[in-house]
Image 1 (cartoon, protein in one colour):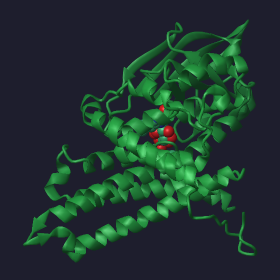
Image 2 (cartoon, rainbow, N blue to C red):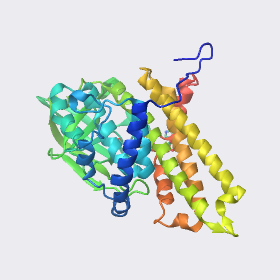
Image 3 (cartoon, rainbow, N blue to C red):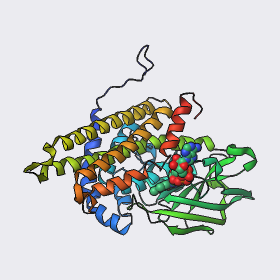
Image 4 (tube, protein in one colour):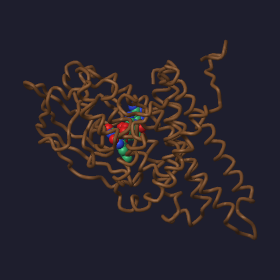
Length: 390
Ligand SMILES: Cc1cc2nc3c(=O)[nH]c(=O)nc-3n(C[C@H](O)[C@H](O)[C@H](O)COP(=O)(O)OP(=O)(O)OC[C@H]3O[C@@H](n4cnc5c(N)ncnc54)[C@H](O)[C@@H]3O)c2cc1C
């Protein structure tokens, strides 16, 4: 709803009872079931796979989807609240969750056939199978239309050739939602979406990538060499570029929620440390330089959270908040970087020690000024929405 005569969107700032309960319940789950797994997952750079069926049983995977398929049918606001809680504990875990619960499964849920939903979506929602989303390529990151992977129609199937890089869950997935050109002559209108099952001949995991951030999320490089899939694995119809964009746009709001969670996690660690650490005879929180840092951090987190909730709320009202989604993602990701950096500074030398979480929050936050659309690209989208051409 727009406030009369102002052109500004307004909202009720209080969460509904069910949203508050959901957030609190999920916080308990994150603290008791996810947090104890984080250290080992980070050190070994492996995702704790037992979380998928565990979260599936509780309705925490793909929670936006219809009850008809076993989903919790939560609204977008509840989803960002959930994302905040998971990222407050571990963005690595959140990253794999997101590739599965949003990016990979979203096109099947929205545009897939009933047969595809039964075969792919249902086991994924139960956590028995894992989804990944394959868009980015060595020569096509921000420039999505530059992808080179092709899916050539051949009889009753498609033959896929190409490479994908930075694919979250790429090496642990069962199903990959793959973006490829079916008809290059149509430009971006010739981009289509497919389902490729792990184990299909020609679907090769070239290597698992070693990363600076989100280490507990597994990321891989993939190769497709004459990989033949049945024609029924096309999602929707050929020419689905706008559906790829829709998937990314909704994803941006979710990821912005994750960024608020990382900032919150780093801030909580910093304020606790500042109250406990004594130098010059008093807790460092009592020095104005540190107290003001914490005040700025709290203010920035609050502003980011409000932007994210506004974008999510607009989506729940049936709007298509392109500009607001990009603003939320841009601001929240940059706040997560600034806040986690200050949290490290407040920790002094201990901030450099891996047994403290603040360094991890900072490494993870740096992934999200790049992943799911860089800050530069978010500014470009916002400028374009403002009529400035981007
Ligand atoms: C940990 C991780 C997980 C990921 N998971 C997935 C996944 O599951 N699936 C998937 O498909 N992708 C995934 N990605 C890819 C991610 O979405 C891309 O890295 C991102 O979109 C940027 O693409 P790029 O890395 O090729 O950078 P580039 O596009 O090459 O950008 C390099 C730099 O140039 C800037 N730049 C580019 N174009 C412009 C422009 N027009 N104007 C101004 N500046 C510009 C960028 O902002 C950036 O600073 C993941 C990435 C990471 C790091």
